Image (cartoon, rainbow, N blue to C red):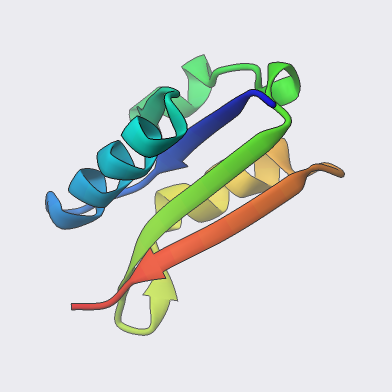
Length: 84
């Protein structure tokens, strides 16, 4: 199994969690920003994707929504989020 942990974070807490998940899975993490969308990693090379985001005003990060609209396909995905 080849996992990756893409995430969005306005602060640093979600990023810290993403890095810890990646360490446990022995894989890389990828911070998603609006400017990084054009240079997205080809996720076809991964078979397990842990997508993470914080919740702001009841919604996931807008960069994550843009990212998901570009990459959604039939994979085993787990989305995690944090509040606060």
